[in-house]
Image (cartoon, rainbow, N blue to C red; front, side, top):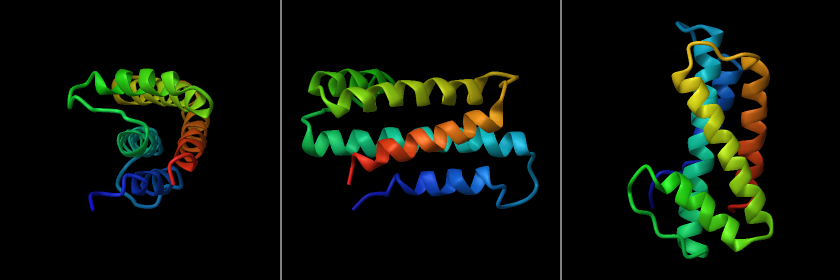
Length: 122
């Protein structure tokens, strides 16, 4: 069995709560948002491969292809696709932008969204 991507959400929660030292609150929150996205994306990707007929390409396009595939499934998967889009936008902001407004609130929102997404992938 491969890596349990849900562990990244636990790591993100530790980052949000500043478990550790040697880095700033900002670095901790940015890392939390990034790990929350990958916990959600990789868990859903693997679930969709096993249960929903998704086939990954191994390219960066898999992020959009997965969301498109989920929207085609309809129902709750449309919401999951929307949450993944939102999480990815937040992750990009935290990974690339020099300034991220309202970072603590964004971090809490990202962790909450990721938890919701994971709840659909037992």
